[in-house]
Image (cartoon, rainbow, N blue to C red; front, side, top):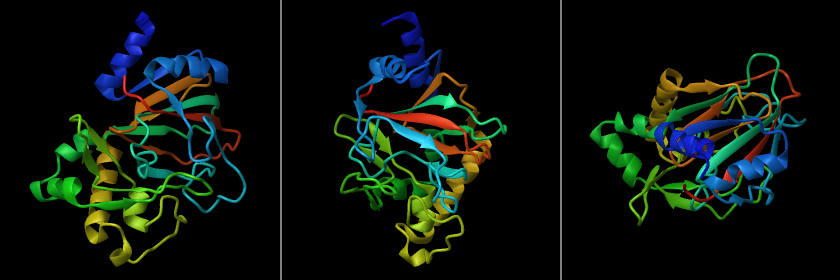
Length: 242
């Protein structure tokens, strides 16, 4: 392992994310990510997903809109979810927004009281296995914090699912709390997570020709609203732990 790769691997372990610069092509991105895990197919069955605004999603909190995307982990309905997520910036927004935002879910969970800690570790949630227009999986039934047989913990989270019952709801959705996955408990948990996120998040405006990588089984992430529809990132999922 080269010094640079070792540094990025250590940052992933220490802070949950790392930034790799000087990546100018899909091939270079795949090569830079190779030491961290195996690239795996995403919702549409492809190894690369283009994060770019497209017509038809203007009223949704979705990757192909320019709207704010709220706090979540990626693909919580997969078993297991991707270990790492990577975003390769091809064209960054010039409007000063479109930040990728990250915060450590472990720190959030450590601040919960005993009752809420038991809830996130014991209350089962049906995590749907597909996304808007995606293929996905059949889904998984799991608490927010899943303890694996090898002693690790997988954290699943979706503000949208807990508050609207859908991963990509309309921006003005007002659902019946009784029909939500955890009812009012889920609403309260989501609001606490959002409050924690606002206070402790790291906001990264990924430079063009750079790849931001983070631990998807540990870190919460979101995206700020932006106006420059030229913004274009390529997303990768990685399966294996370092």
